[in-house]
Image (tube, rainbow, N blue to C red; front, side):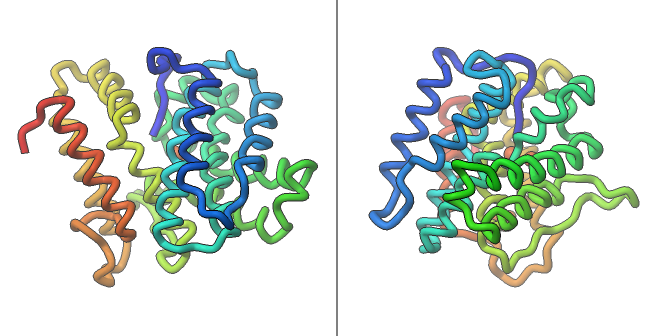
Length: 269
Ligand SMILES: [Fe+2]
Ligand SMILES: [Fe+2]
């Protein structure tokens, strides 16, 4: 992830983005899964707590949030997780980076500097606290039991540790591999870097910083980051393609997205 200033995809509004998110959720959902309602409630809360449908930062955030929530749902269904895990996983993904908006007044250039370690740490802490708060109030308190709220906040509190430089200079900290919900979240979040819009956004930002950066340069760089992140973990043979992906579906989505990018930008293998 994530967004720079105010660049939205052509024609993107809250309604079009949210509508597409809802349609995809309903297409993927199994008969036993929660209806879309809980996501509608979360969206209502975000619109009320931030700048509403015209808040450019909120819209930028939501493009990412819709993608990560939808991809998490896709992975968890393929992993045959329970309906409660799915509800928690999707709600968590929807809220996971809201911390950036909560701290936007405390830092300059929050959207250009999101990789800085202070901002990474602050967005995890602020997001976890916010998720816990809104889930403890109606209407979400009726949809999430106390243990489920803690689970969601716990994932948000650590979700970016592998990308957060440590004070002693180490690159980042691994997540709990045994926690399938946390790990599915991480895969979905990282897949944003090869999603068409996420990739295009990073490309624009990079080209501003360093003229002449090509799509192939960025794709090579992202694949390298996927490989490097794997090295944070003990290798138990569960990683696919020598990258951080451990679920078949997460890895499958990567291959699909990579093909799309190579076609779109005419990148040679
Ligand atoms: Fe994050
Ligand atoms: Fe994210």
